[in-house]
Length: 232
Image (cartoon, rainbow, N blue to C red; front, side, top):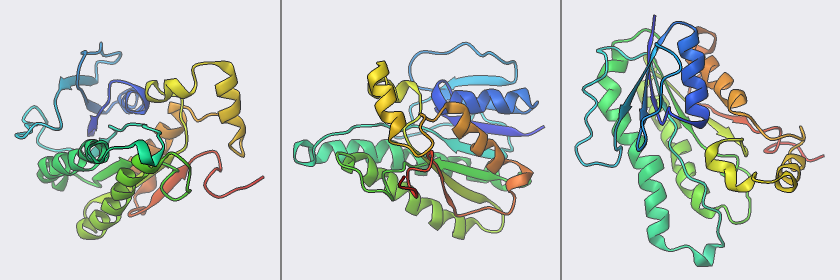
């Protein structure tokens, strides 16, 4: 039995991954920020934390953590000239500083585990230029840089990888998929002609956490329906 920590495990990709890991018999600690969810599986324990607080406490964790998955993110699509510097700073704090604080807090527990792994999340917009994506691409670009730097520093003990999805059907992306016309238009932008699901992304995360992914580190893995590499 392994212990996993999913930051932002109460909805979307984090929730799907928590259920997959728990269904396999592993123990999952999933965090949330506001409304406490009801656990669908006895192997999932929820804890409320504020990753932006000055004195982040994770003393509720077991002594050994096999995998850390950091899911918090935002999707703010605006014209560059309308974005205030504080908006970039807010996203950076959530998606980069938050990840750094959690990794530093959990690192001693990861070092005690066998085949420990960290998974971060980026976006297809970092390596594929898309209009109105400067805010999200800036902070997620930093996440990709952090991934490679930590993978080098933590090798050979701890593997660090990053998943870069395209638009995925989650509560966060609901404003872009809230009617059939939007869903169809966004699906057609992808070579595989559909929107990604939480299961698509969680499947990759579960693979990277497993022994099957034990020779993979420092990678930015695009799970994006072909958007980042194909034009058809």
